Length: 532
Image (cartoon, rainbow, N blue to C red; front, side, top):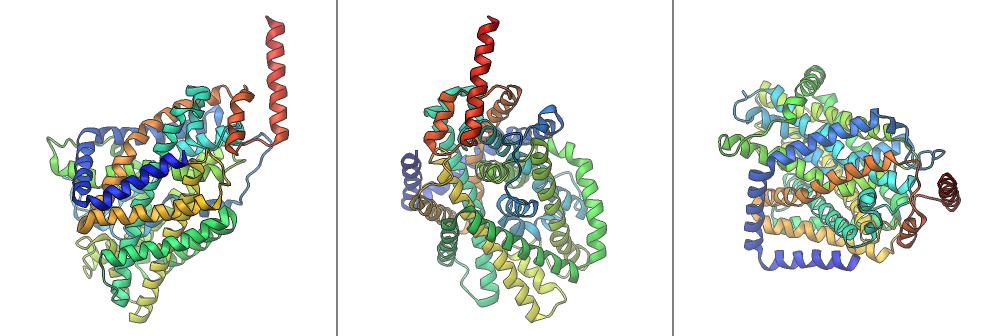
């Protein structure tokens, strides 16, 4: 599958480079088609995933452990949370952190009055429970079927109750190839946003030209950092970068809080969170008809549908990565942790950075954040803060460093995941393949920036929404497979089917655990024979 996936992605790169205008037009047309005819599907399926994972956590399945009953977590809670946070949101938090709430406050959906509360309400909705529920669906399924049932750590394993041994045939390979594309283009969207913001920051501070050439060079340099990290593996490379990134992001957030309007942020945090929770049901089912409300539908396509497609595209990457670092946790602990800690951190992040942006635009009126490009908003706010020119430059450099590390951690984590996907779930593929995928991620990002040209953000959005649609259907099947698997938890997977995980090089079982289950399987068959 490595050769097939690599060949198809390389073919896309070739087409994108040779036929820039045609590729751009096709991407735009596809985005418009999906938004018009499948927008309702995106809205409803994301809401279903949230209800589904909460239901699993509070059900009798919540006590099941992602691994044998006596297994315990591999990573500390702090390290686990750091890897969750940096892999699951990353660049987007910095890119949209200051910009999104003021933008929605000034440009709300048609029918809603401009207001700070509305701006933050939609921001929390886009970055809150729904995206992490999407990640949870696949991460939980892969963790369960790999570490508890002994199947390979790959999306197709979550469909074992539906496909059986065919997960090792073309149906399973097709699912994993879709996951590869979702991961590559979902990551490319994030990396493209990060590249634009890094370029803008370097232009503001040091005069680096803000153009396509600079952005391609930035992609190349940071891809080199990501390649170095991924070569060290998950513990030495990715974990250390993730923890460092978390602390630097925390430092940036604490600094803005210290010099910003603290009372406004603190009162807003409580008020905005309450508004988000009280309106989440209504927002979860809000679908604007492109025929009767074209302006509102256009807003929803550019924001909510883009986000839902982006999160679904990221689901194979984040889901597999989260599963990989969550062995030993219970279903309830997994859902609570993945839905709880990162969502709370995102709410605090937007309340501080977005809240400060709202204050300086709507209360003081000293900076027009909503009227700027999103990649410029953070640096405009740094210049507006009462901290002096020198400190403003230092904090802007810190912000660039945070975005750069988010780029690197997302890229190296994604490289590891894609490598595992194309090797049947093997967590220790050869280093040459890890190198190949890390470089290819940077190449896909560069091509999307080239295809988009001046409208690069539109190109990135189109890629996310387009690749997310087919995988949304896969996630629905994964949800069904997960329930069926947990309902039959006491029955082990037949040894012949688990052999596929041995061929792929990964299994959730140790040899002793495998022997125990094989003896249990034999005993159950013997009991059934005696009963007959």
